[in-house]
Amino acid sequence: MTKKLGISQSGIDAALAIKNSYRAGTPICVPDEPTKILLPEHLINTDLDLLQFDDPLPLAMMATLDPESPMALAATTRLSPKACGKDLIAGMYELVGEKTRHPLVARCVDVVRENDFSPKAIAFVRTRTSKFIVQTRQQYAAGLKLILRALLDGDMSAGEFVTQFIKLTEAGNLQSDVRQKLVTSLLLSESVRPGIKFLMLEHFESFPLPTRQGIIQAVAQAPDSRHIDVLKEELRWIVSHEKQKLSVKRKQKTPPIQVHTTRSAFSH
Image 1: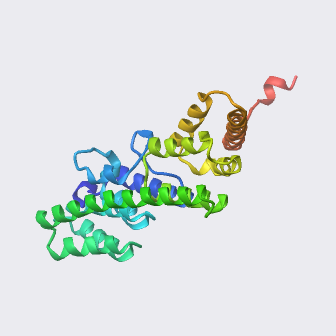
Image 2 (image 1 turned 45 degrees about the vertical axis):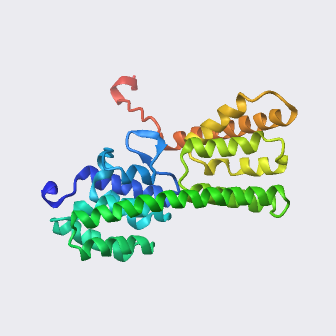
């Protein structure tokens, strides 16, 4: 029955997982690759098998809830051909256009529906979406350069810089290795004040796990110096503190072992 409707149980489970990720503020990763963050390029690439994420419901969830327009638009584009000839999915597609927070997503839905889900309209939307993703990345990269220059020139406070830096890297959907290189270059730079570096480390948990792992490895391999040694010690404390938190969570989730005895075994 689910195949006829165009949905599957694995798709429903994936949609719920995606919803929980948005609520928790954690990144969505490529299926079966927990260290690889899902990017708009993955969604726009129809040759890439996204497994359960390729079902209409997870795509609709991303198109509706994702806070960044490139990701939401890419999910909508991938969803578009799946709604052709399927009443339930077509209704879901229309609902995406009504409920999304992004005007571009609503416009994408309108264009495809107005052209009766024609391959030409879908191809047009995919081409425009690809260009939009590239342009958006360029804009965020330019924004990062501007705030770095403002920081070095003394026109921006350390706190404002760190806040804007994190917002821009998240909104730009930067790949983990790119984000890791940016943060690492700031931490290891002799031109950046120590206070800024420690502010960045205060937000360490906001970075995706692959980014954090790359930063830790890069700093650990950096040549010893007074300020690098301090960074290493700070990162060791962060890692140790995170392990303690995980250990506490595991203990809280582990139910106590119940030992059941019989009266006949111990009554005499």
